[in-house]
Image (cartoon, rainbow, N blue to C red; front, top):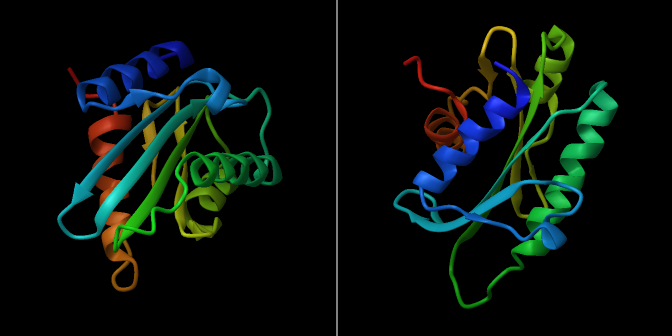
Amino acid sequence: MDTQQYIDHVKTQVLDHEYEAVPPAEANPFDPVWYKQDDDPTIGRTKVFVTVTDPDDIDTATLKTTTESFRTLVTSASPSDDSTSVENRFGYIVFALADPADELIEFATEEFTVADRRSNVFPMLYDLDTETLHAHDVPRLKGRGFYEKQKFDADELLTPSED
């Protein structure tokens, strides 16, 4: 699969799940970005942002900087609403790469600090060669609901089906 095919798959899935495209001026420098607000029965109101990027060359420092830039977009595009009791912001940024290095996968899915500034931003790697999405494991205890939502969303939105 090439990058554009993967982006097209994600676009189809997010639109099927009633996500809306974020206008390019608001999503800059990420394009495309999709958004949905929903009420999750276990974790409350959620605001979810999804993007796919295809970097030419990436290392852990670039992955971290790019993901934090996406976190800034997520937090600025969805300011806190004081009238709601619980509000959770999620960002899924998928780096579409051919044969990503093991240390990059480990950094993105195990070492990157997901929760920060009242947001949960999950960097994931999609291996174009093996058509594998590297997402975060669900921990045994603390924060389990957030990681379960990430796993569910990754399966529903970001993992191509084996048709």
